[in-house]
Length: 112
Image 1 (cartoon, one colour):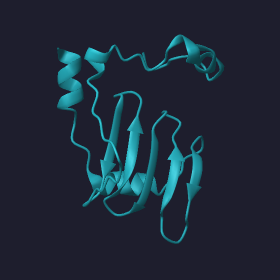
Image 2: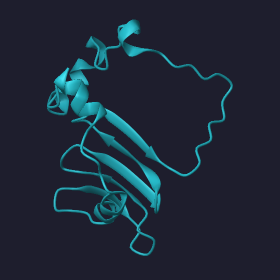
Image 3: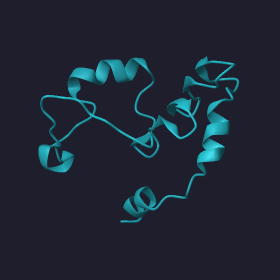
Image 4: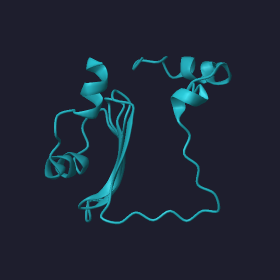
């Protein structure tokens, strides 16, 4: 229950700080950042993958929290079929046996 509370009620993150961090690559970060606009995509040394196109417009994938965040004033989905699957009911396994070899090649599951 404590882990669930940490995920749902984690410390607040200041979007201004995230924007500043997103435009600064560190030594072990890999990615592309446009030096004029600050737009870019980074794979951080912490495993976080983030991309920002403009202030309050971007995404962030955090493997330590198993969270995908989208920051945008407007979001639009265009599709023929949209389906939400409850992972706990569907027996969701993000790394099945088919992908175990790939996981082993990239260093195993450090966030389990």
